[in-house]
Image (cartoon, rainbow, N blue to C red; front, side, top):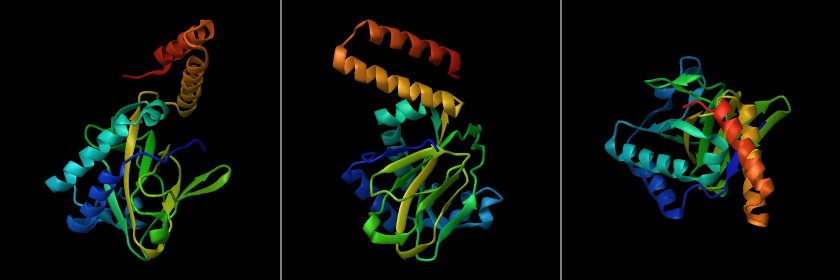
Length: 223
């Protein structure tokens, strides 16, 4: 399964503001934002997005996401949802489910999903994000401030928390490039272009790769 892990998505001051928000701002039942099928397996708490203070944190984190160069290169975001801030206490979990293909109004196509981890891994047990694919299960548990971006159509779950508390932010991305295989080709090609330019400068090989990259973007991009 093609996914991207980012170790440095958010800095310590923002991480602290998000943790403080979880401790002080109003929460609601997480099932309020789940689709009709996922609602039956979702058991967590969520900060209330109708509160202006929560909304301000959502916008701030969204801006950090959109400013990250590697995420932009990997996801090629066209539209990004505001993040939802989740809290899992002991015994809470999110059972096996698949995200809705369309969300919001006007509808956003959920090509990719992201999870930003806000709790240190040492602060809780369990709570792994588990992605299911043809090669089996991929458990993901990253340190505070890190994020993972993965296909929104993958079956996945959040394992029960058995100690401590798991804080995270989740959201969805509609890419300018709908097809996942095409996004991967563009991602590999652009990283190769950049590495070649750093090593050899603006030579014939770099120009040829740039021409190919531009041609594929014109073929595949939806704007």
